[in-house]
Image 1 (cartoon, rainbow, N blue to C red):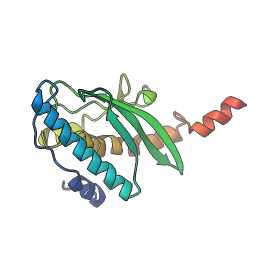
Image 2: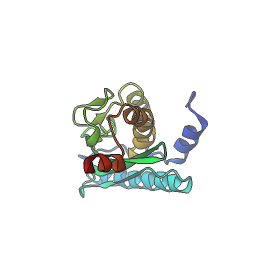
Image 3: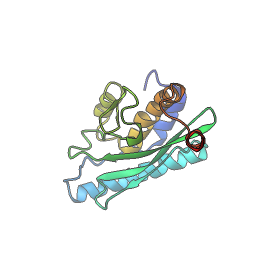
Image 4: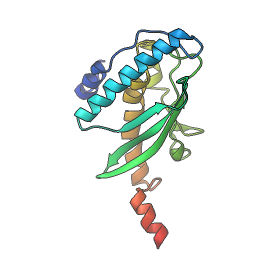
Length: 174
């Protein structure tokens, strides 16, 4: 955690670490892992709300907990930009991090792969590998998606690649 800003370090230390090394094919162990994932997500969401930093909603889209969907948002110039969020849990999870997708931004930035998968290879994947199996979904959002949004959304807005929903509504009316 050397070189991290104090806010990131503080946030990360408050997200519970996971202990069960299990993936979707591991039966009862996967159920235990999912319980730990939910506890970490609840803690992270609660912490964000108490710090007035609420920026995502997410839930399992299937009973097995292998598909997750939700919304994330970023405030830029006092305007809220909201995006659909989705990912599948890889079969090799937790050894392999989930590939977080923002489908609405597909093709709008070079820091994204086909299908709207955000680029996390250089900075996040080595960190995930080093902390496997202690990191989970909440950690991927905190250390993967949050910094990606902070880096990319202002550039996309300033370059005109994305528009605020109110701006888009005004331009379509005229």
